[in-house]
Amino acid sequence: MSWVYLILAIAFEVIGTTTLKGSNHIISFKTLAMLASYGFSLLFLSLALKKIDIGVAYAIWSGLGITAIEIIGVLVFKERIDFLKIMFISLIMIGTIGLNFTRTS
Image (cartoon, rainbow, N blue to C red; front, side):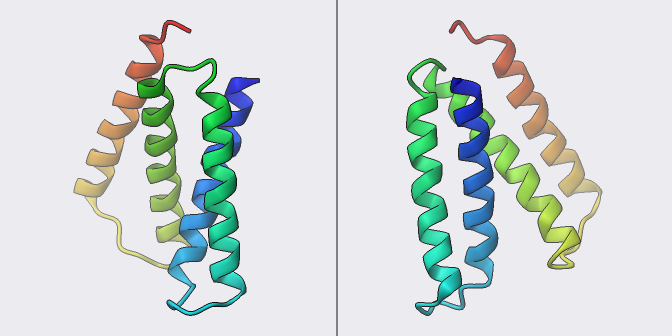
């Protein structure tokens, strides 16, 4: 169940970060959705940490979040992608996968 919590934490973090881009620094539905998403993300991350090592969970949470946000940035917000971005995100993913193999829980 801890891995389900971690996946939910990642999903809500990605939703929160995506709505942050459109919040325009004012109190709006997007701002409230962002705050609620980050709250749920941290709640589910804390539940995941009951069984998953903190370093491994945080690396997976942040690594997959960064990757998902970059993909959303390119597809939804039409942000630029280049070889260096792809290379460095690939290194993040390699590190995240590598840490997952070291887990002891």
